[in-house]
Length: 150
Image (cartoon, rainbow, N blue to C red; front, side):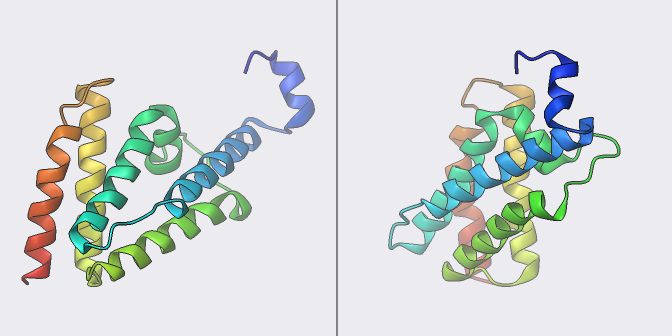
């Protein structure tokens, strides 16, 4: 931020207030990216588009990903106002998944676990690369066909 700590606290009353503002900004960006999707008509391709968009958003900024999705800061809990765009993004994602025929809560949980796992692997084991991104399309296709045939 290129700002001295005392100056920063002119705008924020605590470290958690800084995190809260960062969370709100990141969650708002995530929601905006999901809202801006122009989904293909094919449900499988739409499912892959939503998930790869989320993956790319997360991998683009690992610190933001940790703040938004991993809760790595001890004692930090986002305020309801900061958390609101995250809830909106989750609800939008659930709407997208339902539109692709993925409605069972178990399958929604599995989809989020898959995308989180691939995201974590990419950030942890091939930062800046494409190793896990290159596998994502195949994994999402397998999953989609599995849950649609259950």
